[in-house]
Amino acid sequence: ATHAARAVEYSAWARKSNAAARIVGGEALGTAIASVALLTVRRGVDSIIVDDVPDTTNGDFVGYFLVQAPDREAALALARNCPHLKYGGRVVVRRVWPNERNLAVTAVKDSGGP
Image (cartoon, rainbow, N blue to C red; front, side):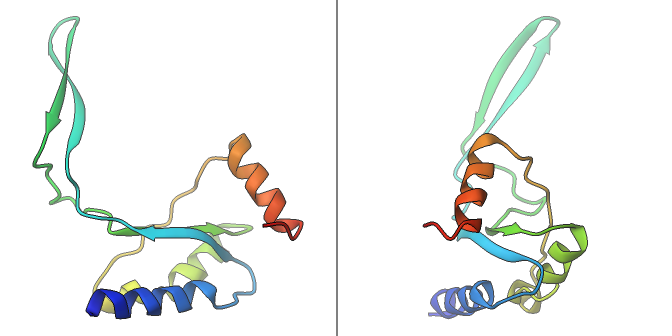
């Protein structure tokens, strides 16, 4: 019940109009189920390591929102109002580097498309 109530609250926050930035996507994430890493065991020999019990002590992501913002300050203004903060969570703002796909999606949304 708590998860469902928070999902409703987060969704309402994401739909709320904001002058400069807007949410264009996002999802809750499940718990980590594995991690994969490259380990160099000796000079020139690499091994792929799969850990079925990944270390999440460094702060596991629990969800994300994809934000369209003209600049850092607009993204931070939106992040400062995220409900996750009032539950003791932390919000990390990161740039998503442009690529053909996300530029095309942005162009469609800006033109009033789907």
